[in-house]
Structures are given as structure tokens and as C-alpha cells.
Length: 280
Image 1: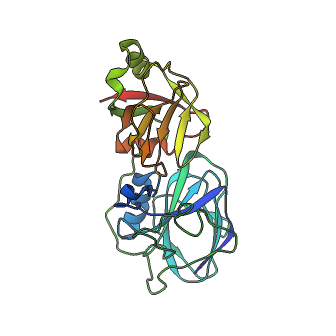
Image 2 (image 1 turned 180 degrees about the vertical axis):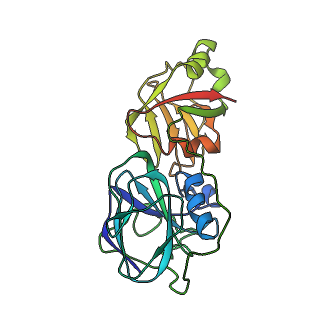
């Protein structure tokens, strides 16, 4: 059992998402940065789909009442055990009574805390991913008690050292042409791939909006399917990049589609960060 003493800014339980229900309008959800979450699970020998805590910018404080092991990957939010700093991307043995906390954000934006065997919280539609309206809560609350498999001990299955690629600082976001890309004038197509764009303060698990507008003279489209990584262009010229909690359909032109790895990179960006679209 793990008790939440402090929640942090936005901490939630996530796995690889809720697949197979999009025709009912259910979002995929799941971890924003699949790469980082996978590193944390792999280091413990967990199944790839094991649920983790996704931590955004400011970390929680967690009290462990059993022996287990954890691994933290993704953003560096100065993790500590009982006040002593610990390393990222490395299995760490936890004893009963230990307290895991976080401090200053050093790099990135989202960290992932995996526990041996994964978190055993509410499972809805074959996923532990929290989402408002689907699960009872969308974030962790103070005094929540998180279930884990207490029969598992030690550091889990040992693996060879894993080389972790640090991509928090890259500005390059690789994209494919979206279905409506060809309807844009050549000048606007060129702006998309040559101009830098800034992440606005409107960024969350559902979508990232960009500050710089792109003139939109396109005709509205019939509501069509969208998915994480779809870049929409609104009538006012605002660019919106859909993320893991996005809706399943939309009526704005879909001018670009992020590569999966680029969604992971974007998930580690926040307000004021600059990105460049790289067409592939």
C-alpha cells in the first residue's frame, strides 16, 4: 500500500491507454510520454502495460507501507527517498515506512514512477488510466491509498543496462502531412515547416495550443476521426496539437500528424518552449 501525503500539481495513474473503445467516443488516454514510462517499467521487469504514476512539473509525496522497488524516468524533478536524492532510470529498493518526494524541476515536464508489478487501482475498459467521466477520479487526491502487489519483493527482473536517450532539449517535432495539408496554399505549407512555434499556456493532457497563428482560409470539413498527434487548424488560425486525452472526432482541418516519438517529446515541453515541425 502507498499513501499519498501530497499530490503535486497534476499526478495521475496511467498505463498505455484505453484501446478499442474509440467508436464509442472514449479517448485513448494513457501516459503522455510512452518512451519514458516504458523505461521505468522495463527497468523493473514489469509488463509494458503496467500502470505508473504520471507526475507533471511538481511531484507528489508518497509513503510506502511495504517493501517493494520503484524506478523513476522522464523529467528530472529532483526525486528523493527520506530526503536523500536518488537517480533516475535505475531500480531503487523501497522499505516499509520510506517516503518518496520530489523537489525542483531540472529538466523535462513529466516524470513516471513505476512500482514493481504496477499499480492495482481502478480498472475500467481494460485500462487503469484515469480520465474524468470514465474513472471515479482523474487525478490523485491527498490520502489516497494506492494498491500494489505486496507479494513481490526485491528489485524485480534484472536487465542489462539500458541507454536512455535524453530528448527533453530537442526542438524538432517530426510530422507527416495530414489529410487536409494539401489544401493549404504553398506559402502556408512552407511556413509550417520553416517557422518556429511557441507552446502557449493552454497546454494539458488533451491538447497543446501554439501561440503563433496560421491564416486559415480553408473550408470547414465534415467531422472526421482524429487521434493523438493530430494537428488541427481552427477558423481563427490557431494551431492545436491533440494529445493522449483528446476527443475521437473533430471538424477542424487536420493539417499535420505527429510521429509517435514526437508525441513523447512534446509531452516533455511546457509553456514558452519553442518547437519546429520537421516534415517526414
